[in-house]
Amino acid sequence: MKMYENIITMCWSIREVNKNLQDRESMADYSIDYLKKACRELSEMLTTGKGVSLDEEIEVANRAGNATKFTIGEVAEMLNDAKKIIEFNLIDNVDRWARSQANEG
Image 1 (cartoon, one colour):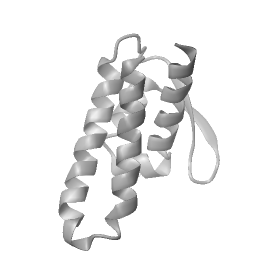
Image 2: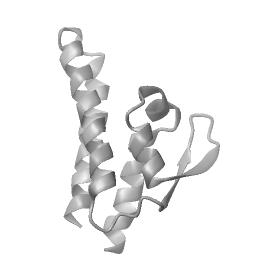
Image 3: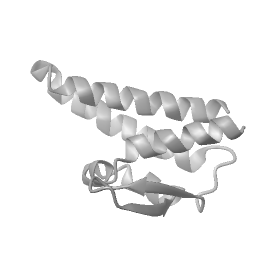
Image 4: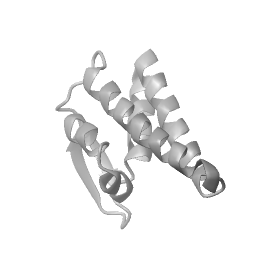
């Protein structure tokens, strides 16, 4: 349960830093470094978390609204690729998955 709360918190943090990135040009380099590190850490949380099956599937919708499924392992890999994060709206989809898992637990 704690792991899912940590994932939810990390997703929130990534969204907030990303949202504030445009407002603070002087902090842009720091913010981008933070976002890269946070996404790496989120990836590690998914792959090393107790009770998480790397074969479990998450349904994601891309920017065009087309839904597809990826395994947790695939999502964890994609969190290291900024284009994939944006294309598949991964932060919101991981957040939604973690919330559903926390509610089941």
